[in-house]
Amino acid sequence: MKLLAALGALALAVPLALSAPASAAVAAAPPNISLANVKAHLAQLQTIATNNGGTRAHGRPGYLASANYVKGQLDAAGYTTTLQSFTYNGATGYNVIADWPGGDPNDILMTGSHLDSVTAGPGINDNGSGSASILEVALEVSRQAVQPTKHLRFAWWGAEELGLRGSQFYVNNLPATERAKIKAYLNFDMVGSPNPGYFLYDGDNSDGVGSGPGPAGSAELEQTLAAYFSSIGVPTRGTDFDGRSDYGPFIAVGIAAGGTFTGAEGIKSSAQAQLWGGTAGQAFDVCYHRSCDTTANINDTALDRNADAIAYSVWTIATAVPPATVWSDTFESATGWVTNAGGTDTATIGQWERGDPEATTSSGTKQLGTTVSGTNDLVTGRLAGASAGANDLDGGTTSIQSPPITLPAGGTLRLSLSWYLAHGSNASTADFFRVKVVGSTTSTVFQQLGAASNRDAAWSTAGADVSAFAGQSVRVLIEAADASGASLVEAGVDDVKITRQ
Image 1: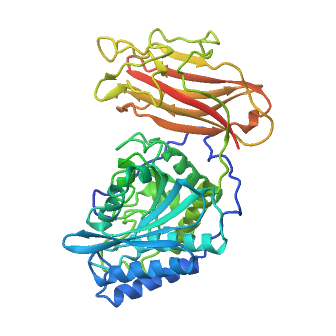
Image 2 (image 1 turned 180 degrees about the vertical axis):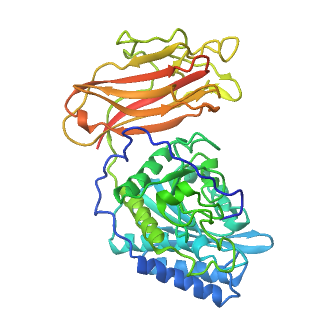
Image 3 (image 1 turned 30 degrees about the horizontal axis):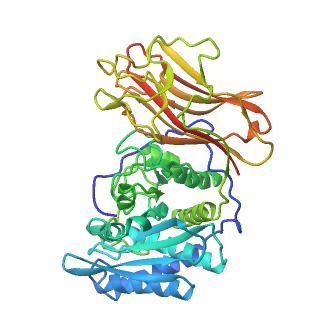
């Protein structure tokens, strides 16, 4: 991982009742990846570095030997592999690209890690750990003769430590038609840090900080990984798409991304030590970019958990049967949504309406003038007015309710939508964006609270399992509130959908 600012202690704002994507129909259960096998790959990378001046850096013999080791393993396992060369700083670099036969060639799930180290050391945690883990997952795909519905492609990138050079070369040189076939990219960089945290790339921007959400689909990748860690009782926190690793070139061209990270030179806080164990006040990896980043610089538990999380995500995403759409609304026509259906709304202006929104700004974007699809969305006061505060939500709560939706019995039902909540620094946790499902009972399935800080508008995606309402006639109820007096609050919704797996 290239050296940038230290990782902060980011807290993941978990939506109420948020669940992983609908359970996939798979050829086999996601496997338990052998820690011994992953560590055997790390031992090979260590030996390569030791035999080549202690490093596996770009342009050094140890890097090409590392690439040849990975390629040899994949060739023997039945992959179609390519050693893609590029030039940087006068030296030849290499990406290893491996395709597993089968799956939809127009729907590619790509999984990648950078293979190079810095010149100072062998780079066993950074990033032998990610490279060895995805290599063992790829080999397990071969052992189980997986027949995915998506096409599987794995990649080991060169010259990441010099500025994502290998992955940037790959993405930049893909024809537009080939680039469009990659629907998701999973990135694993430093997954065995000795004083580990358990971070997931914040695809849905639930943290509300930094660079905003990833491209459409990134939230679902985050949720899939979160589901695995939840299943083993390990809490996770968000980490921003800050450009530190090889997801960068992918999200720059609109490809959904996700992945895990166990921390680099950032210091573990006391709260993080209470959450995950380890040593507060010490770096997640004290040997980051140093000669001591050897096989002794690995936390076996973190490595084992992350390797299994990689396998879970690959199996879950790549072998899933596409869900069937039960009901959807893009708001391009009036379909019967009703405002203030319960007669209890208190908002005086900025009530929910369907229409073509106008953009507003106040210390950043507060109402988006662009929709996720088409021309219209649901928005709190669609007109811009003379100032950002002219038509923003004021006076309390506004609600809008869908027409009746008949849900089938059986199967896994999932509600998804695109949304944003924006507010000024004069907001508070009394302000909110909220989604409920109303049937024989009423359940809040998603909620984002305000805060006393500026939050700009940015489309995010959310999803929830609504299988508890199977066989019922339900309505989707969307609420927003400005309950902090003079705070500036705006919200939007687009592309609401219920699917069945």
